[in-house]
Image (cartoon, rainbow, N blue to C red):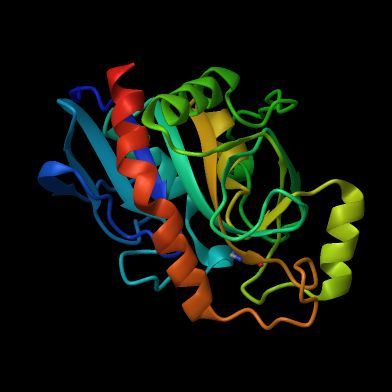
Length: 252
Ligand code: HPA
């Protein structure tokens, strides 16, 4: 069955369970060969274009990062007609310039996750893929995100390296110190395998990272304890410009 085009698919992370501004919303729950979704894909209109939104962890945040069915989520969005995906990822900041409430559009990543199904080649008999991943985020989509942020007057850091950790626990200070030495600016738990799978599926994919806290030991008070309340408050505050940014993307 052919589907009308979806101009943009948005995947929401921790603290982002719906997308403000979508109108005439319909719920879809496509069945994928990779299994079930954590909840409905909400398809609505924004700036006259069709936009799909999926809460990565489910709308009640019931799926931890290592249990997210990344393949099903992306395949479902693709089956609804999406070709470009904007991933919202809640993260901790590691380096200067990536403090709480900063929005960033990283251009690199390092994968520290393990034991997750990270490829479409998992099943017996499936075609072996060796996709190019030197630029893990689609450069043209990153450019659209950055241009839209500028047009919308939303501050957005251009670049940075996202380190994807296994979770669901937060990191030790030593782990964050090592990630800093490795060159990571941001740390989150859901950036991979999502980005790699998007590449295998042929989807354009960019990450918009929402910094919720200083990562362990990275902030001015190295002994600060990270609380979920702080994380959620910072995500909410930092997300207020997202509808305007996405509206600009759709009109570009
Ligand atoms: N570490 C990993 N993931 C996160 C963090 C963090 O400090 N904050 C929000 N998501």
